[in-house]
Image (tube, rainbow, N blue to C red; front, side, top):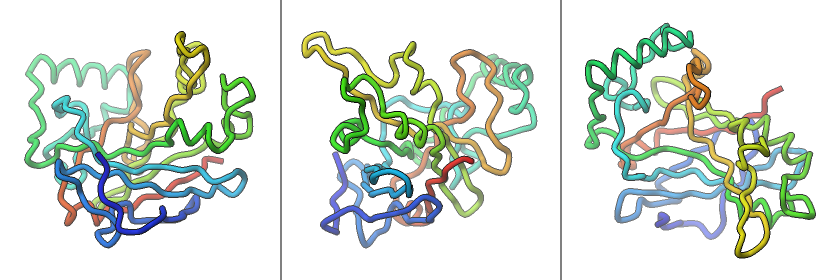
Length: 234
């Protein structure tokens, strides 16, 4: 369920431009404390991407090993030097598991903060090849370089497009719908973050991410302090 938009059309933003995802004068939280806000992102080289910044509860319950809580650092994952060595990070997580990983207090932080480029928008804007099985090469090249940063009062977190999204062997770009007989694109997600001051975490398993979730409290007083920025890697 989306938040109520107080303006008739999405705000236009540009790569490298800071923006306020949750401006109290533009959006409201819905009844369950969630918020989905659309923006039109200009990259300079391609037609405009329609992007969405949102907070949502996926009903999973989060352990301290899986998420940062930037507004309340002690409530979430604590980053150490061990997190930048695959072997040391593995040992750190294994030790946490042995000791019992506590859950993050949902009264402090309960909603994921993510970004997304919606799949229907990719097709609507002509970003797929003629057979709808893949992204157009120039679109894929831009998405591979695209990142999203969120700034908080105590630091900046960044995420990049997951490279496996573009691997045809993982069927991440498209998935086959047998009944309809065609491919449908999946969303481009920005949902695995690391503190920009330290860089990506070490991956210690084939399916392990170099970042974690970000959890926030569904309260506009906190959300209004967040600033976002899309960036393109060189």
